[in-house]
Image 1 (cartoon, rainbow, N blue to C red):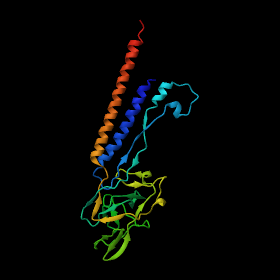
Image 2: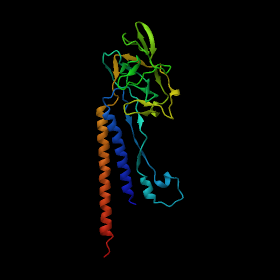
Image 3: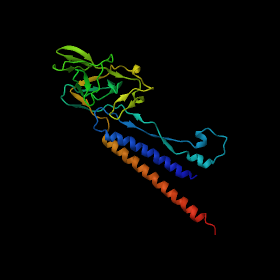
Length: 256
């Protein structure tokens, strides 16, 4: 086995994984309420050390090189995105931590996309896909379509001076462990379930505003460029080692 070939291949694979993550971030630089992902790399020990097979013979010099690198698990950055005023009374932005709770594909889910609308049934829904917005009891919020809606900083939905519902503004112990959909919706999974959700007390809702994507477009573009250069460098190393292997077979291995 050409050890250097495998080391370069691990570097190329890790760089391409980073490139994919940052490209997805950049593609969502204009997605309301989107939270970017981040990924790193970690050093991989030599196979004998990684598999705890210390009684096997090995090459001490090669073991000092390690086993290359591996990408870490993709994580979610919950950085606050900038708030943008829209003037639409059914737009709400969250200032601080937490999420709105919606019904997504028949199951409770969380979102930072506060662009709301009113369905034909009179339920508050997410404007982009019609997902019902839930109150702190997990039920849809019903309003009168003919009466203007006011949403207070603590999430009360009011019409004609009376409270008709309250938006669930909730948080979970570690939202980075949740599954994120392509549109930025956070789905519950085995690590984080709906029972973990608790009322948020350190946040405010801002009516007539939305939270733009938390992606820094320039930073994402620079990260893509850096990952691309790293992948290209490793691919050139692979090509060079392949050429050396060819020379070894065709010249050094030639029998006079």
